[in-house]
Length: 412
Image (cartoon, rainbow, N blue to C red; front, side):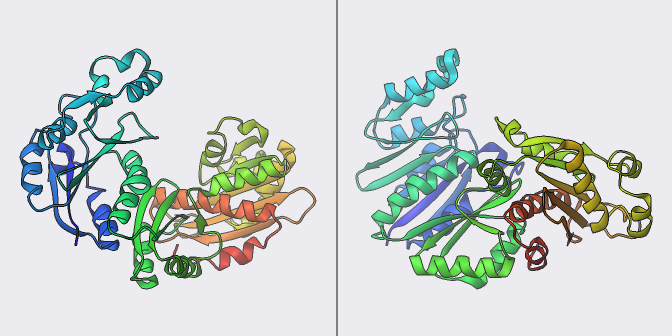
């Protein structure tokens, strides 16, 4: 059996300022392909990596190091590995040229250190940062050095290191698949996965508006696991690949040459902000009306006072008027509205976490749905409302039954 050790570097970790995001993920993935993890060590940025490496090499076939590849004086990983494996550092001109292209004049000086690698190392390209990683095998020992930031480390680990180790373990045929989970909490997703499969390795990466899910196992086991997760969450909650709900909606708008406008209360303009954060958004986005105060819903969005008196500002009826009237005002093809109670207090008898979303499109009947995010705090309610609006707007444009889709959602 292959024995592996993990070294996680960062003074913020050893001081308890931030939580380690790598150890559990890497250990779980290695265990899933039959590699025995014998040691997981967290150390500060103080040079202790040298004697830790010396100790771990005695009983480890593989060592994975995260952190310490940056340009500062306390980034000591590459020098320590060079010394430990008796492989002198050299300047890789190709990497240095890339650094100069990215950093211009800043590539000289301290940043230049990121272009040095132990002789004989294989370079692992970093598509999300400036510090490339590397892999080195010598005297029957293999070491992988990766940057510390999760958005840089994880893609490099999955695309290079894990695939390399699968081949080393004789598991080159193992399928690895990436999915994007929407709305479900990370802890709940892990609970569902424990029930889904014990033969598939599972890892997650939390992001603001989605959770990236990585599965490793046989093709049939991976398919069974993802099928179970989809059944337990509902339609459009687990998407194939690295994507998100906003991206899917925008793609549909562009493909169909449609424009969209938004009317927001609960989210205070965030829906419009997200739709306009990408270059070229003027192709599909017309504008927004943020009607946080009730009187603005009446005065600007022309929601009848009788509707508000009868149903309240947080209601499907109000959401419908908001969507229909903002579409008319903005002269867009599609409109989405959001109203709800983010908390901490109830509003007009509606409990915290109640969210209503309205949809209107030219030439078709408008729709509205009500969702319950009552088990979440203010920030989470708003984020889940935004993602839900993107998912359901995309379905609505395609002519699907958004009421049926939303009513089938579970584990939110």
